[in-house]
Image (tube, rainbow, N blue to C red; front, side, top):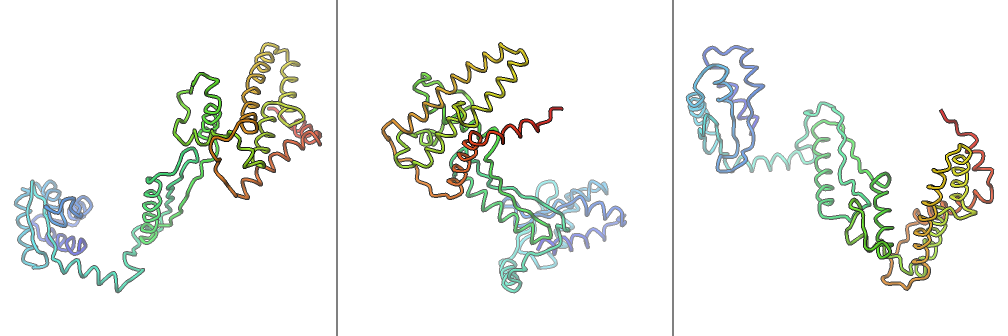
Length: 327
């Protein structure tokens, strides 16, 4: 119906005294006929009379009344009204809506297709739920809205690529890790919690690892190996990494930095080992969530094998270090 209204508007504009092709083209570019925000103002509304009047130095209300009379004579619309400084508000007949349904039924999947997008490439990224927090109804809304928008743009001639980012790395994951560790050790820290850590109820649930080894021996064994490595316990890869770093610092004569590094290593080792103690020696307080993801289990096993392999085959680490070039 908007196309029909615009066709009649262009016919009306072409009959105005003093109108030429350049002026008509300018008016067509600037005015708009849109669906009304409020049904009290009809179904469609157009600002064409105000745009044309400003360019032609005419009274917009007088121009609007002339357009109103022209549209009424067509008998295509239920009601035509002039509003405000020169808006044209149009109410459609019921049969106009029924005709759209007939058009939808006739065209089926092809209904609404156009070349409006002109082959432009558009990338839509939606949902992208961070693993640092639980899913909520907003993510569901985003999924439906994003997918629908992508389908509409595809049907109107655009080349659309849909993306869903899994933000499982970087600063957010670092904060999540720190939040969980802080929660585990909160009693020893006098309930201290850094301002920028996550504090939701789900952090408490994730952080509740008490006695988890009884239900998840594989997961806890893998975490134990990783935490021992982070603590710098031999013969794991973390020990050798810290050893080479400290040797380089000492050989460079930076003894103060070496002492600071040693102190922080000992302090952090205490907290890493405490998590292991909680998993293996504390009584279970709440059943830890069960998971059967082969990918997660495989990643944990692979991480443990790599950490242990540096002890069994230290030449691997030596070769990597010797091939590192510092520019």
